[in-house]
Structures are given as C-alpha cells and as structure tokens.
Image 1: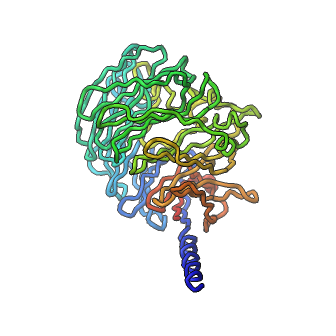
Image 2: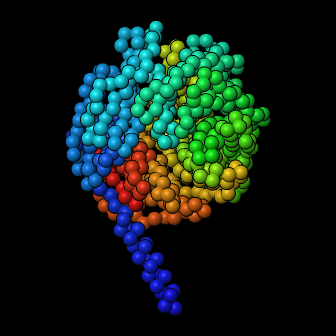
Image 3: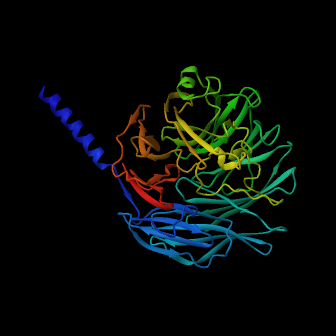
Length: 513
C-alpha cells in the first residue's frame, strides 16, 4: 500500500513539474514590425534568438535574449534595392543569408555570413552568376541542404528546350567552399514532363523526380527517380512502376542513418478520383537499387476517424503531407493535414488550386522563359491556398484534422491516429494550421482552438506507440496576442519561437513545454 502511494506521489510530482514548465514569454511590440512585413525565425545562436525582418527594401536582424527582450537590431548593409529572395541556414555560432538579384542581364547568387549578434561577417560572397536575355521576376537558383547542414546545394534548370532540360548543380560545404559543380542533361520525352522534389543527403548526394501527367493541373501518371552521386557528373535513373495509379503530392526524404531514400505521395485509382491511400517507394543508396515498392490503402476505420465533415469516400481528398520524420531503425512517421478553402459557400477541391500542390508545379525551379517560382531554402510546408486557386474570391480558409502514420523498417503500417481539430478564418490563413515540436519522447502539435470566443494555444502530443495526450493549456495566454503556430520554429529540445499578431504589429513568443 505504501509503495503504491509513493508511486502515485512521484507521478503527481512529475506531472506538476511538467505543467509548471509550460510557459510563454512575449517580445515587446515594435512599431516598425508591421503585420505585412516579411520575417524568418533563424534559430538560437550562442543563447540569443535571431529573427530576420524585412519591410520594403530594409533588411534587419533582431537579436532577443532568453527573456525575449530586444538586445540589438542590426541593419544588413550593402544589399541591392530589389532582392529575389532571402533564405537562411543557421549554425550554433553563425548563420548564412542567401539572396539573389539581377543587375543588367546577370543574376547573382550571393551569401552573407552573420554572427550571433546579428552583425555581418566580412563581405558578401558570390556563389554563382547566370546571364539572362530577359528581366527575371523571381530567383533563378533553388537550394536544399542536408539534415546535418554540412552539405548545401544550389541548382538551376534551363528549360529552353522542351525535350531536354539542363540541370546545373553547385555543392558546397558548411564553410561555403565549392566541392563540386556539375551540368547534367535530363531527357524530357513526355509532353507534360517536369522535375520536382529535390533533396540532398548528408554526403551531398542529390535525389529528384521526373514526373508527368495528362495535363499540368492533373494527377501524376508516371515518374522516374534520379539519383546523382555528390562528386559525379552523371545520374542513376530508375523508372518507377506506378501503372494503374494516379499520384499527387509527392515527397522525397532521405534516411541518412540507413542510407535509404523514401518517395511517397497520395494515390487514387482513377483520374482526379478520391484519395485511396499512400504510394511508398524506398531506394537503397549503397546498392543503387530499389529496396521496396508498394501501396497502403486506407481502411474504413482510419477513413471514419480522419474524415471530419467529408464523406467516407472523400475522407482524404483535402489532406496534404506536411512532415516526414525518419527513425534510426529505418522506420518513419508521416503527418498530413486536411486543408481547403471556400468562396461564398463554394468549396474548392485539390484540383482547383494552381497545379494541385507545390510539387506539381512545373515552374518551381526553372529559368529560360521568364518563369521564376522557387522552392526556397527555409520555406514552410504547403497550404493549398498559398499556390494559386481563385485567390481574389477566396474568403474562408480551413485547416482540420491531422493524420499521423507510423511505418516500421519493412514499410508496413505500425499504427495510425488522428488529432481532431476544426479551424477556419476569413481573409487570412495565418492563424490556422499547426506547428510541430519534437521533444524526443513525444511529437507536440501546437495549434489554436477557440473557447468562449477566445483563441487559445493548444498542445496535443503523440507518443512513440501512437497514444494522443491532450496537455494542459499554457499559462500566460495574454489577451490580444494571436498566435501563428504554423510559422513557428523549434529552437531547443522543448522550446519554440512562434510569431504573434498584437494590435496590428508582429511580435514573437518563446514557448517552453
């Protein structure tokens, strides 16, 4: 009896400490931080929190202490008036700002090193240049970096010939020393061919897909997997057998621990049909050969749990993949969220949005005809209304249930679960969706819920065996602060910086679990 009481008291103490650890600290509003400014949470550098801010042609780095009080704010000097982009990668002691601009007929790809106090280190470094015969409307180079941040790739795709694309890659290390430059030709025999889903592993190997459909805004009916070794000028091309499947929302993810590469996406059994399940393909980097290929058909229990207001048949038609987390044992975890929009009561499906998803956008990485949409190095996950659709008439945005799937090393489903939520907002998607924090023992999903007409930041987590925990509400939820958790960034084991809107200004909150 005594032992049981002691065990109960210990559990109560642990729970009490966990609840007490939950806390929120807000930064003070800055009159220059208007709600339509651009910003990027860079991370935690030497104990400071760095945030990039841009309004018009002014670019600054704000440095906050652990109490979220502003330590210093530095203007980034020497930048041209018009930048195509501002992408960042952060390390413990410094970060890089990557940007592109055009001067006359030359596009410059540049890098600026910044220290932990937000000050520029040295002069900007020119990474590459491209001569154009037109004025670009957006960046020419796209980028990706490895999980350990030791390999960074910039690439550009020349599409002047619709039968053969020229892919130029530049591989750098963490010191921005050029390790390898290559130019490869990719045959594009199909009418609606495009290249997509570029990813790089810890050795600098590059993977991407050549996919095609019956039209640009349609299912994928065929694709080839390309693997480019880091220091070589050739690619290994593997046709993927997707006969009878109509694919959408494709992703690539490297498993650096086991040297595997996962290709996954939703599939239907007919053109523009209802989503039936997931297509999964695993490539072995050491053997340069496929390890597994198969499909997972969603059963009725999962459909019923995930469908929300949809019918059983259409349960997953609004779902988009947001996170893929690889495990050391070779298994992985995948999350997807239901997201859609309406206008004057008319709902749009995934085919009404421009090109369906960002991975079905044939202009993501290309130059040659003046197109210029880029993937961005630090971009947040996809929301359908962010990539087209009838934006001028859309006035209500929705973000509903979150599906979590866990796969074992053999690529069979271990467990599935659904976090239930229902969010909507008019004229803005900033306050809906979720932010993900990985505390090692659990995955925490942070999102807004409305109770008694007040928006409250909620934390629901999932354990390694798929159990959902509804954690207590946060303390210090001050009135007037509207959280934007989807744009938050994890900066510690149990810490996250989340932007907020307060009286028309952008502020930032440090959330501690």
